[in-house]
Amino acid sequence: MTPVRVDDPDDPRLADYRELEALGHRPDPRRFIAESKLVVERLLQSAYPIASVLTTESHCARLGPALAARPEVPVYVGEQALLRTVVGFNFHRGVAACGLRPAALRWNDMAPGTEHEDVPEDMLSALCERPAYTVALAQGLSDPANVGAIVRAARAFGVDLLLLDRAGADPLSRRAIRAAAGNVFAQGLAGVTDLVAVVERLRRAGATVLAATPGPRARPLGAVERPARLVILVGSEGQGLPAALRAVSDAEVAIPMRPGVDSLGVAAATAILLYALAGAQDPGL
Figure 1 (tube, rainbow, N blue to C red):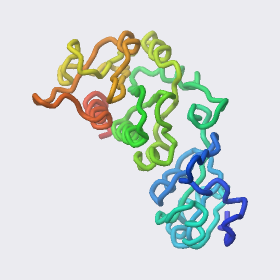
Figure 2 (figure 1 turned 30 degrees about the vertical axis):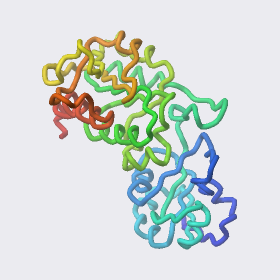
Figure 3 (figure 1 turned 45 degrees about the vertical axis):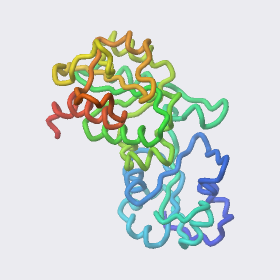
Figure 4 (figure 1 turned 135 degrees about the vertical axis):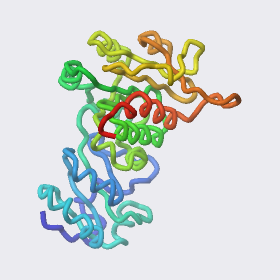
């Protein structure tokens, strides 16, 4: 689509971008905002539907090939001052896009009564038919930056499906998308409400479930052999994995550390686990 010049900050076509950091701002539960050239470029290269792009002329030129590949996406171009007025802060990134959420990534905290679905059945069925796969499930993560970092690690180390607790942070929040550096748009991802039921389903289909925990029953990471069908469970930094999830695991695993260090941050620990159990065996790395 030919870029459309906009000069009025009150233009209704820019409503999705208005006052993004205002107190009490509640975005449309079926949409999300991506920011920066790198992140918007990765969104444009993905299969996600996109409602629009808002950018300056200079950033529009830099995004030329990516925009040309998505001619159905409306592109609105304005001065830097207009973007600042619309979003409500000094928007130095110079480009934003509004994407449309799949139903599996509509988050609980977006709006009361928002409809959503857990892991789509066709996604689970297709996964269970594969002879080998890696699934990671993160429970109770409240910090969007941690969620984004885990998405990035999952993408880096070949995780086929990342499942996220719907009671935790939204992976398509602005902060999580930034922390993931846009990798969220290429990573298999779904929100889960009944975590135990999904883990049990995968286990019945032949997966081996490993729970990351520093508990006394945990085996050192280096002593764990990688199964063909693997589910890795990680929990929050404060509480760890609840007993119900540990109960449906086949084994517990821990990262050995020097005395005096009792834990790593959840994002760092998850990245180590994913590399050791998935990435190190990936011929594509």
